Image (tube, rainbow, N blue to C red; front, side, top):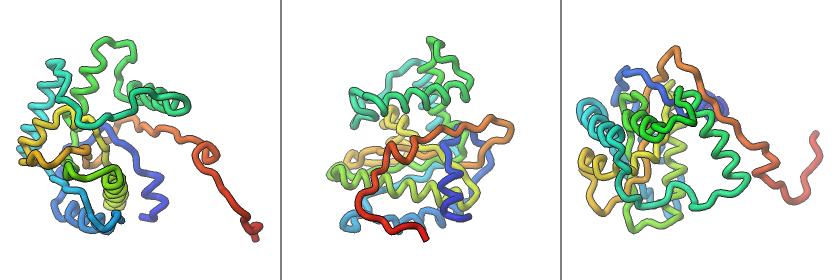
Length: 226
């Protein structure tokens, strides 16, 4: 698959089939993703790949917590800034509205938070979830490195014909996740990434992106097109 095609076709899929994913495919993806650049070549990420009964048990516990209205574990880092202003708030609101509609959840549904949490806790049916951790001694630069690493992983998954969905939501159930994967207290959960094949017959959600002029500024003299 062409790199541009992989970038363009990558979406946060929220409806997976239960078809198993071969371990050798994931090993190939993660081995290649190790080439992701990181400051000082620290390679600060540590990934736990969970499938089968351990994942099923994790989903059961997390879903039970979500359906019980459990607010989740104390956050170790904020998902978003405390105050979002335009244009960021506008983009967030538009994307949220699309997600709710695609998931069949009315924005006015008073039970919406619990329903959304339960869907997330089931990893949208994905047969594999990657949990990315960082050492607690790492700083903002290494968190940025981890973001580049996960984007590389998700693009390589597209090259394998697979889809993914990054889920910061898993940090709400970080204690449950840590018990499943055996992560020690020296690691902090960055996010989970659900992996699998997209379930057929489900409406495909593709959120919009800002125009290039809104996010990019070209500075300097540029030669005329030839």
